[in-house]
Image 1 (cartoon, helix red, strand yellow):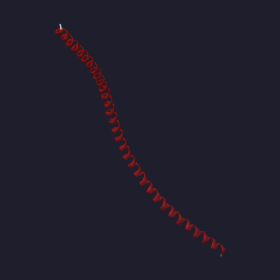
Image 2 (cartoon, rainbow, N blue to C red; image 1 turned 90 degrees about the vertical axis):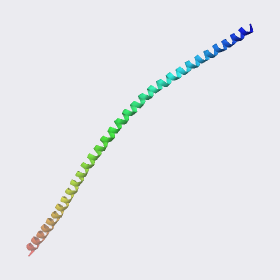
Image 3 (cartoon, helix red, strand yellow; image 1 turned 180 degrees about the horizontal axis):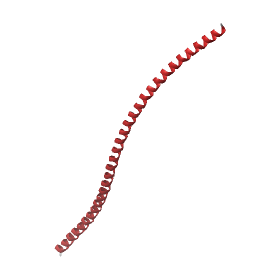
Image 4 (cartoon, helix red, strand yellow; image 1 turned 180 degrees about the vertical axis):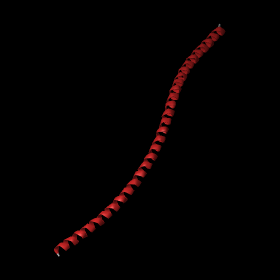
Length: 115
């Protein structure tokens, strides 16, 4: 009878341990499912980041091209402005010379009238 009692105790202990093992396996299974779900979400996030990065790279490339075009346009405009400024300076100098001559003619005419 003691042999059967010990056998029953050992079998009960094995059954309890087996139940605990099954419970722990169920807990691990839930954790693995959460990890897989997180992995799926992480893959989605990574895909979105890759797409956003590609979009940003294209935008930066376009901005660089626009900047180069703008610099070229501004350079042309600046050169044209410098040319116009030089022309205006020349015309102002000539205008001042003409005014000086007119003033001299007016003074000569005024002097001739008084004589």
